[in-house]
Image (tube, each protein chain N blue to C red):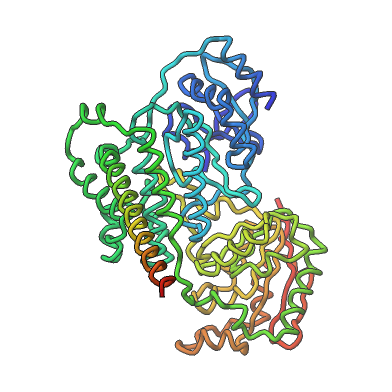
Length: 469
Length: 69
């Protein structure tokens, strides 16, 4: 949701989540992203550019590129056009290694900024986004002149937005980043202390940045200590050491390679080799007919089908509920330099909602969904049988968010469906191929249907019906 | 970066000097804690270095005695 403002005959939509920094805000116009920078933000912007830091970071692909638009109006601020991010993702949708890379990028930028006598005045995880296969900082207003000798203003935010979620993911459970959905400004340190295993306390890095830090927060939570704050000092060397120790604290974190329900899906699937390659071939042929630009692979698992050759020039969101499978997908793409796939952790039966101030600060997943194609492979039986979603409701879910749909129907006779049914009564009398087709025909035209050899499954290519006005 | 250079010059010519505002609450505890953290980190680094020196010292002694045998 964005708020519309009419200006000069064109509609300008201000980003509702961009209101905290008085130095500027983000808005959209005619599909482009702009940033307004107020008078108070111009000094730091000047320094960012004149110091060479902007060029250095943009050249290294660590900061999103901006260009000036309109005339420089010093009294009222200025406008810059920002490179558009294909899909804005949030920390609670990130897998462990993406999250870790985002944390290290933030610290790397902070260290680089210090070399140019600047620093990051905030360290929000929401400022890091995935753009063409790399992570980038999207906020040029995050930079300000380094006040020599002062402690880092964003230390608390960095710990709550990055260190705590990563530590919880590594030491407690890989799904702990879901807590970021509850705590908009990061997971509180006192909560982390209660959740972490006792032995974490004996690691000097975490004893300092989490346990002692939490104690200090508690100690000063009700104090008015204005003069103490003003007098507080931290030398440049001290700050650099602290940044290095945060880098170590993040770098050493690893997730245990636990076997989750779906992390090993493609090796334990009931597909024969012939059926699997036949499935790939059918999908490739369907893709040849439609040449999509924006694709969502729902239930992507480790992204096997997101990496089909026919999809290499498209922008793909590969989402799955299984955090481990998503992490495998991310690590694979990172190692093979695959740039067009963004793997996200997402439960399609409970997509991430709009949260924050007025429920508008962070967008819901579905709000951002506008795809040319959705791949829904081996998904429908989970929606209908594991989650009791009626077939008609499945069809009405896909219809508003995509033009084309490649969907696999898996009949009851299939062993994967039988696994889902083994512990429950079969109440799904209408889960048949004909009911599936008639439900989807309400919203889509079936362009093609192909049976997969050596299996019980079929794959459909559908196109959304045009709404009659 | 031409556009930005021109833009920068335009701003500099107009002589901008306005106050910037820190909008983020650093948290009193977190802000004050950093001086303590820096000392603790320094101490940790020193202990680690000291420990490494001890390890190197003993390794040398054992190597010498192994060569002697």
